[in-house]
Image (tube, rainbow, N blue to C red; front, side, top):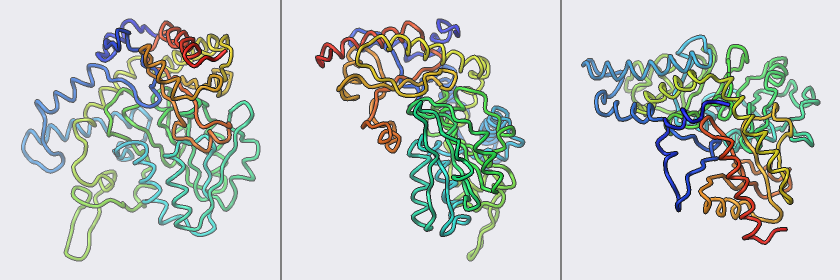
Length: 409
């Protein structure tokens, strides 16, 4: 276990109480809380550095630019990219995946081509490809799941074929915590020459991700799921892929030269970053990465699994609980989704809220997966570095209140 007593002191929001009860925040798959160092970095930017970047020749603008670009270098190091030019800042994972769908997909996907995703995908890694297929007359194919809620990769050679042009796969399910064997899937994609995209929204905040080792063409993830500010995401792309890819969003700062009839694009990564960036939050994102690095990514996934194992053991003792996701915690990140008898997930979430426990309830932007599971949605606890075994106990104990209120045996 991490030293949560020390860590929790860095997160001001965890001092809040709701209806006289201490906040137990277990919705980390949706967004994480922010340490004081990140909050202070945002304030410091506006108090001491605020200027537009890349354009000014005065000292303030140069300092702001240096702070902004130092985050790009920090991100590149964090995921082991070869070059900081391979890091494109976006609004989030969703924005990054849509960028690939438009900037890469419109040029490279044609009628009859196939795009492969999995049944575990968040809508952000489903809808852009679904709509691209509709526009182009292409076919969207799904890698199914096993009965134990792991991904079924036994038939990859019949799913990823010579017709496959793109494979876009999550590394960790936001709805069930399932960790996907992406290396095997990416290898299958490379055998047929398909371009590869990895949705790292859940994995990058919780475990080591090395893009050179993965050898993926693209990786997308978000700052706000890893202690950083909202409104900042990353699209990693191999240099040779980004250089050939055309931008699809136009304006200032993404150009080298503009005439009345034509435009020359800027170098990567700036040709994909039109307009004024979310400068303050990008600058603060660097401090979130530093914080995670100091803790150690291996320690974070270990901590998640200790909490998950404890939660599964406690909840297995409650009559009427149906847990989804792999039973082997080594196949999972820190996510536990469940249902309780015939109680709607929203009712579970509302009653737990009365006890100061914040969880997520619904389909988790994964409706095709919920349909496969035979339910409209689930209640979901998701853990991070500041969560404790005691908080897990409080949340599980609060489920007894749900049973009492909803009259479930």
